[in-house]
Image (cartoon, rainbow over all chains, first blue to last red; front, side):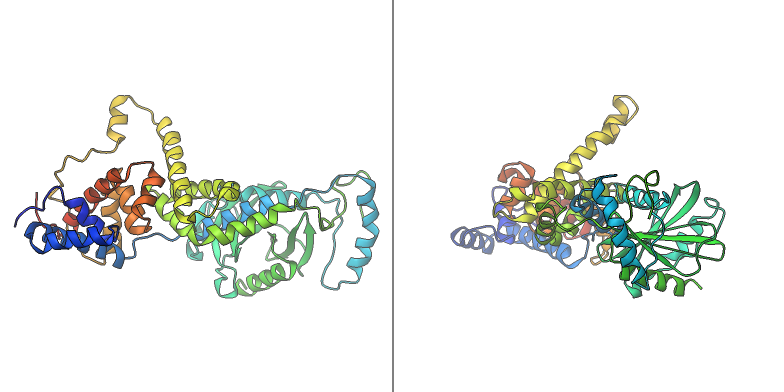
Length: 248
Length: 197
């Protein structure tokens, strides 16, 4: 088989890519009609392009990247923290208590607890680069055993993708003196960290709000669970319900 | 509620509306509208350049945040080529950081440098069956730079020659010749090369 004309080869690529204007395209096509080597080369170029177009080689961004990105954007958009200890913040205290008393679902716990601050900080830290998960998979059969030997309890793991809370992976964390398993879920663009450690707390879930985050706390089977996220409280309660149902 | 001496952050409450910097939430939603459709492209390019899934995620995240901060500079140009140029730069930043960590003398560095294309493709490399995604991905990964990047930008991300030239800072003629080399390498791996070396 003859070789393609060296001065024409790049034009053959440009023709195949639709990069030639009409006049040049016609000229090249006319040449190809009369040149075996160039015709064969053009066919080769088209085969390669077809293989690349037909085969789904492009990668899709993993869920963990979406989660990291959305968390970073949420962080950029967060309102500035309230001033601390000013008169205006104490004045709100009474009205918050009255409001809470009227909301049967919500139970505010004393703000003196620093555990909630640590949980919010742990949530924020987890959203930074490379800190969201140590094991990134939606397979609960990989995440659950991953914690063996890393914590001295077995955290229940479930993929709640069917309920809109896909499993992203797991991470070891440490806060308030506990070695914690952090099981990471996603709700659309938002991250939910579910912190688990050995402890005894309320059997019925308790909801709190802190610095724009929702926190839900409950206990079962000798384990304390804290779910933290910037999704709305009803959504996080729905997550708690789905998780509890899936891990009985 | 707690009094003085308890948590200094104050009682549990929401930030009042208006406390947010006005432009920030809008910046995020404008970014999502413009750039959201191209997140896969950003990751895919990072993956083909770095040939490493974990690095690709870090590079893409880095690039996307840079893009977020620069989104107001977009003035009607096409978003995908703009974003992919940022990804490419983020990849080179990552390479510089990685290469700086390599311990070992000039020999080690030379071994890690991209193999120059001698024009003689390895005849032992197995032919790829069309439709075999992993084999084709591996074949693309085997293409040395700067040929691989030209192929990915043109054939996978569908940038025009001009856009590839702008994203890579190379003249169009150079882009075209790199593309031709990359396609020739793949043609041999696919068994469709019109002339064997």
